[in-house]
Amino acid sequence: MGDRKEGEIIRELEKKLWSAADKLRKKVEVHDYKYVVLGLIFLRYISYAFDQRKEELKKELSDPQSRYYIKDPKERAEALKDEDFYLEEGILYVPEQAHWEYLRKNAHRENIGELINRAVDLLEDKYPEKLKDVIPKIYTDPKINLSHEDLAYLIDLFTDIRFGEGHKARDLFGEVYEYFLGKFAEVEGKKGGEFYTPRSLTRLVVKILDVKCGSILDPACGSGGFFVSALKKIEEEGLNRYCLEIHGQEAKPLPWKLCKMNLAIREVTGDIRLGDTYHDDKFINERFDYVVANPPFNDSRWGADRVNPNDPRFPYGIPPDNNGNFAWIQIFLF
Image (cartoon, rainbow, N blue to C red; front, side):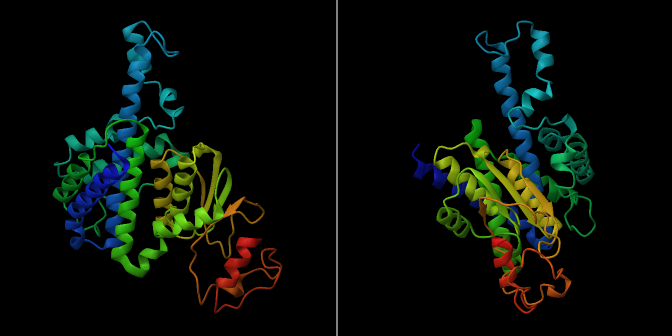
């Protein structure tokens, strides 16, 4: 299958999934709905990746030529439960009640919202450093005007995401996630721009800077689009994506969650911190090979009066409060 034909198939699948999921958007504010949908895509992905690794491991444990070979069948079965075999490949070990198959089997129960939230709790407890407060637990929130039938509909929909096997298939989950981010941003209009920068722009900036290995910072990272484009460029050039150290800061909690999920779907981690870069720069004393951003330009009330007069980031003086552009330029430089 050629790349062009394969790309067309992926685009058609994305459109089909979006069209189906979009049917429920009229029942709930899009600002809330996107977290319902993107959270489910994320849960679907981590179970998929876990299952793929488990199948690979079965073959490795049974192959006498493999360094993981175990002769005894009972010992092999126990080895499949060894979390280290998964974590060393960047895959999370998913507990049974957090697994997508468990959610699928129980999708049509009236308490499915509670079961989804419980799945999130289990994953947070197991991987606090990676997932604590990352997946929104909003599936029983009264303001989310979705019935258990609606949640079942979405679970059934995303169960149909099937891209084959291997790392390329996992990357395609990232494509779907990114596509949905873009569609939600389109629907939200100006507000959507707060968390999503169009792929065409992130790719252009990354190409102009010729991002390769090293360290990268986005001080207004939103959902992490610049990181995704940088990783894609690095892989297209035959480099190892893990050679890029990712650092980011986001002022709003929900886009911060989207960014963390966006990276996790691609099996990479980054130092993504929550805070207002204007007044609480988490990386103030650090330097990076690349700085990328699509910050809130023309911010007319960015809080100049709250900046320390001796802030080292502003050697040319603290910019006026009526235009934050000059604040961002100095932050990028210093």
